[in-house]
Amino acid sequence: MSSDFEDIYYRNVDMIYKICFIYFKGNKYDAEDAVNSVFTKLLEKNKQFESLEHEKAWLIVVANNYCKNKVKHWWNKNKELNFEIKSEDHNNEILQIVLDLPDKYKIPIYMHYYEGYSGPEIAKILNIKENTIYSYLHEGRLILKDILKEENYE
Amino acid sequence: MNKFKKEIDQINISAYEKKEILEKIKNKKKNKKQIYLLRFAVIVLIFMACTTTTYALVKIFNFDETLKILFDKSEEELNNYGVGGTEVNNEYKFDDFTIKINQTVYDTKSLYISLDMIGKKEKVYIDNAFISEGTKFEEFRLEETPIENDKPLLDMKCTLDYPFCEQSMALLGEKENTLNYAYNFSINHEKDLINKPLTMRFFIDDEYYDITFILQNNKMKIKELDFDKVVYNQDGIIGKVKHLKITPMHIIVTFDYNVAFEDLTQAQINDLDQYVYNIMYSSNIYTYITLQNYSKLSAHLDYEHDEITFLKPTIDYVINENSAVIDIDTLKSLTINGVTFKIN
Image (cartoon, rainbow over all chains, first blue to last red; front, side, top):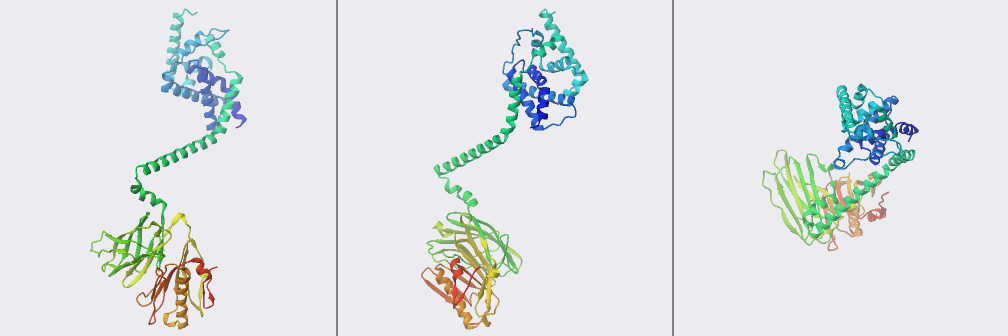
């Protein structure tokens, strides 16, 4: 096993963990398993990347696909995935709301607002039409707004 | 959304967990081979369990008879050996005649041989299906079932207490034709066929051809020797071994004589007789000797009753072929009139 792999691992593990964490609605055990599977796939494929961006995008796609398949699995469909995010120092209300969003909104919102990807970039990485990404972001924002209004969040 | 960012920032995996996951991934790769081996072992175990269960079921419900042929086909192999012809993938080609072995199936009680005779001959006799070396044949039955033949054949069905079956005749016609024969040899004692050659003799237009089947028990290997090193010598070269085939139990020798019988001296004829006699006597097994002109010069030897009968030639004939089944140790150490025959 080359040190290249370890470099890639340490460079991206936090991001992949976050994506998986969001997908699995805060279930850290499932998220850790997913991280394990995503990087195992990388090791098996022995993938060579053209740039750091390419590397990041590839891992996002793999994590996205893995989590999507996992969540769709019949076992997980019947499983309650509502974990409450607790933190001593911070209030995680928005994150909790994002986790409760339908799956299709979560990753575009994460990629846009956290990773700083633009609409066309997200569309390219996730292989979804640009307009669809824009509408996911828009609809996601509206849902968030409604929920926050209901909860009188300022 | 800044708050959202901050909250996302809090989602972190600890350094310890990161390291642990990395170790797991590394170990997964290391263990992959072991996993494959384990899978293979499990498959083998399942296969063995299935086989054992099937075997047990067969035993319990007495499916033996039904399945016997199925199993025996794979276990037993017949080795075909042609004398006087060229063996090419179970085809024995003679000058203008071919005998093609289609199928041989052996089980503990019978030997089934299906063969085609292809050629243009006026008549064919199928004779002398016998097992050499055997001593007792309580019931040896030869059945002939012609298949796909537009001309009627004489049935050949006989019960033998002597290992020679009398002739049957088939007309092949003047045109090129193919006859398909199927023989079923039923034998009471299953040991009779094991390790013993079975020879069928085909008389075709007054000539005959022997085909010897040797049952190879438990994957016995056949060792071929270099024929040229075997010299049959008495007052000069009379002939040398043409074919030699050795199994752990037998050696089958075909002699090729290149001297006209009329050119043989009386001493040489005597040597030949003596040679054959010695083979018979010292090998102490049932043996047969065939010479080309069967009616004129042949030696049939039946050791069943410790008797050897020679049909001695009274007039001169060319001796082209002579085949014998003898014990290998006998051949190695055979000495006739002071001449030792050796296989190197």
